[in-house]
Each structure stands twice: as structure tokens, then as C-alpha cells.
Length: 305
Image 1 (cartoon, rainbow, N blue to C red):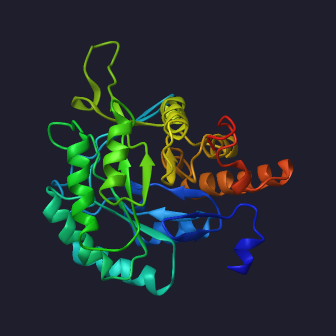
Image 2 (image 1 turned 180 degrees about the horizontal axis):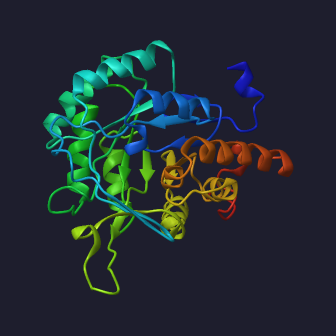
């Protein structure tokens, strides 16, 4: 902890003291123990696992489509079983690694059961990945749904957890519902609806509407976080969407995020890309003579930070 006190890039989220506010988000790249450990070694302040689910869909349906402004993906949840994940999480806990377990299930009761099992591993923090729009039939999220899942998890564990929500309609209502039901933090944003079309044939690529992520959504998520903070939301926030460089990290912190998730950019040169963002942000802080603590909320009008 003494080392962190003298580190200008130090941050804290979900009770984790981070050496950097740069957190690797949940996805295909965080589905293996080796990758998670290498991402931490490359400088991630923490890593969020691929979402653990008791009843994942059959394999073979996960596809990625790279676009100039990001990526559309049809992925959902990890195919690894709960027992395998729990064994992995125990090893991370034994090594005191800052790993956040992403969880979802088909009902609040099932999610509560899963959360209790994961809490028994010694895992230090959770993220509820309840807003994935790639579920069968898509997803229409409501404050009531968010409250049901959040409250179910809070009823079985004292572990700190974040609820990951998608930017969009009535986001403030969904944030308030999560906080009222016991969330310790909010992650914003999950992927949003995206569609790609072959201009020559008119064929809908990937076969439909799926989750879009990348630099194209960054201005939208920045605006959501900025307005949430301006409207008085005080809960810790992890900003997520379109981070590719050190200035992106600084922008998210400036509008009020306490930590910043990066994911899509890592699909190209995963470890080198992460190291570049992390080291670039350390250099940025040094060049500007600042700290993470001083950056957070600096874009907000005085009295609203």
C-alpha cells in the first residue's frame, strides 16, 4: 500500500487498490488463465474475466466483425464450467491478483447461487454482466430487471460488485435501481446495438444485430457519464467504450470515471496494445504533472465533481 501512495497513477475500485486505472474488460481475451496473468503482467490495474454463466449457449456461434470504427461481435458467455472457473479464481485469490469475476445467469435466483459459489473462492470483487444484448432475442433492459438481479446478488454476498449496464434509454433509472438494490459501482457501457451490411449484396453480416464496441461509442459513453455526474450520481463508475490510447483514459477520468476499462483495442496485438496504453498513460501523467485523483471529475463544473 505504501508503494501505491507514491504512485500518481494509483486508483481504487471495488475495494481493490490498483497500480493503474486501466482495467481490462470482460470478453474472449479474458477467458483463459494464461491470458489474464499476462494482461496483469503487461500493466493492467485489474482484469475482468469473461462472463461466467451456469448455462452458456453452445459453442460455434461466436463471431467477430472488425470495422474501421470498432467491432461487432456475437459473443455471449464463457463455455468453461463453473467448477473450472472456481478453481481458476482460487488460484488468482491465492496470489492476491486483482481479478474481477464477471457473472450472469438466466434468472436472479440462479445468479445469486453463482455469486455465492464464486464468493467462496476468495475472489475479491464481481461485475454483473447482466446487460449483454447478444442474448437470444436481444435485450430490453429495465430498472426493475436491474434491481432484481442486483438485489439477488446482494442478498447472498458482501463482496463488492459493479453492475455493467449499456448506455442508452433511461440509463439514470437503471443506475439508480442498481445502486438502491446494493451495487457498489457501475460499469458503463456494455456494447450497444450495431449492424453491418454488405453494400454489394445487401446481406446483413453476422446474420443480425449484435453488440457494437470501439471508438465509435466513446463520445456517447463520455456524455452519459458526464451527465450522470452532473445530475448528482456519486457511485463509483468504470468507464468503458472506445479506449485506444492514454488520452482516452484521461478523458474518461476527467468526466468522472474512477477507473477505465479497455477491451476492443486489445484484439490487435493484445499485450503490446495494453502495455502501450498503460505506459502511455503513465507518461501522460508524468508530462502533465498530475495524478489520477486530480484528474477524476475535472471536466465537471465546480461543485459537481
